[in-house]
Length: 359
Length: 172
Image (cartoon, rainbow over all chains, first blue to last red):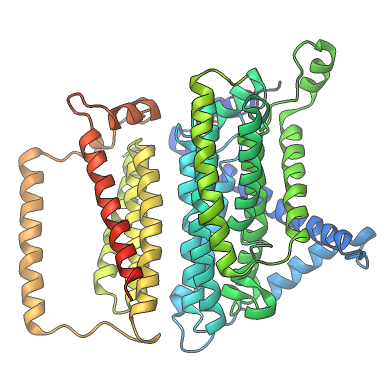
């Protein structure tokens, strides 16, 4: 398996040999930031196209098909439209907070995006408490959503924001506990070590067998709720609240929410594929050496993206199949079913690990 | 000045300005937002020192805390444009006396113990990173320097909060 850190180390050494340390650091930071932003924008566009086509497929429609072959240029046109639209701010509002809110949301989303392990040695933020850092930074996004709802001076916005607050804080609990279940199996919180362990000893969803599969299903449910997507899209339910917390936003300010929503879905899928499906780890079957050799020849980022799009397919399937829940049903589902189940799973996983019942 | 020192100065200025904005702001939601910046800046300092766990805890706890502040300020204040009341002369005098005492104590402590940001901000953060194992073991240890008692005491506090919440919600 190709180790991407060989390339980054070579680049680092090359730059250090011709320029001082601080300049190297700044240039590297700028390069990494550019990389993140480019990937972010590209994946947002891909995601929007995939979502439109998939939604059309589920609803027996064709989806976008006018601009470009199979409507592929449609998203580019939409991006250009959004970039050139006027940004207005409603009267009698707090302009500063109204302008600040989208940036909080997009910052939280981009920082969590930087946690994803793309390939062996190709990850940007890799702490020893990686998973915890991921959850912590992700929780800043809610601040932006509540701020957006409050600062818009609009009843729809505030209702949407309060719903989002209740929903996201609740579902963060079961996401955290399911992730803890898998950390219990992994024994580490660093994303690189989690992936390495799965590359060495098999994916966690197989090693943790029944408990891991149950945790995976739970994570998919809670992940959809965490991204404010249907059947949990109450905060922005268009038939009752116009657009929820981002009703009063236009142009690129709205675009930031749009971007963050799709990329949060991508990040959610990326996290699921990292902690359950092995991240960049190839699929190997012990004993079949020829098969394993071919699988290992496929580069890590292809594996990672393949898994991410598989999980995305599951998430989209869930999103377009179920009708929207009511707010009391959402809270009931979380507090009466998902939290107790995830706690039981955590205890079960701890028992399995301590009695050596995992593979 | 190396990169660490520059980051320290940037964060320190950011924290100080946000803290000033928090107390000087008239709108309660703005004050809460600036408070969030102060706390995130502090988390940044922890990251700078290599305490990634503490930094993550700071971010997670206070992002949630500021949300609760928002919800309170939305639910408990009347209307969008309500501003905090003007300070009277008495309040200004009392506030400045307390501030001066606080500054005196703070500067006194720093003066007697010595304050060297270069030493404090650790020259090699990667070596000083404390692993999750150490934190977890220490949290539940009863040895010297263990944190089992405070850990359990906090859970009693949480229990009290839950019971109080139930009592208030159940009252008819």
